[in-house]
Image (cartoon, rainbow, N blue to C red):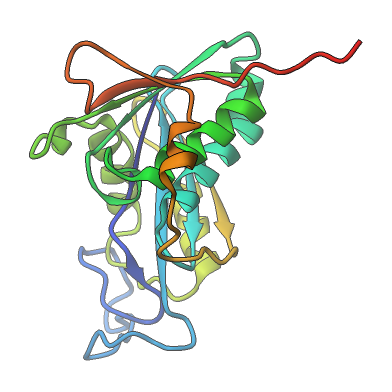
Amino acid sequence: MISVDTKKKELVGDFKNAGREWRPKGSPVPVRVHDFKDEGLGKVNPYGVFDIGGNAGWVSVGIDADTAEFAVEAIRSWWEHLGGQRYPTATTLTITADCGGSNGNRLRLWKTELQRLADETNLAIRVCHFPPGTSKWNKIEHRLFSFITRNWRGQPLVSRQAIVSLIGATTSSAGLEVYARLDERSYQRGIKVSDAQLAAVNLTRDEFHPEWNYVIRPHDRLVVA
């Protein structure tokens, strides 16, 4: 079971970062007065995947649009680098997510991309969306993102690599492990999913709040003799 979400977008550069850290007396880190985006460095979108049972996090640090395609690619990266090795006999992947953002329950692209992932991994993907206004109960918020924020407090996020390194260095007294990777791919905005494409998703809705709870199963593969 994993919990997923996009952390707050962060400006890259020598900008003020909330919090305090020990420094030699009289040598504070200089930062910019205004937080206007640096056109050369831009922003990053840290998308997190938190393994609830394993207390381990994976963060894909995107540099382009925060789309459903990007969100599912982050889950795919987690499975390829961590999940598949830790759970080699798994047949089902359960995802808890908010109702909005790049993993929103109404997003057609979210569902079609999850179908692709299910077909690639041969996993049945169960999705449980938190109702609107209850996203604070999503475990990734207080078991991963809060520790990342605490770890980089008071430190300007001067480069993309610095952000990846700071995220990867995050730990907790409970044994949290965090892995981070820079995703430099470009993701197209505004992709339209037709009714036919949506109908092709092998989706079964639960009886309890079917708009928030459903399973996407792999398509049957034809075996050629």
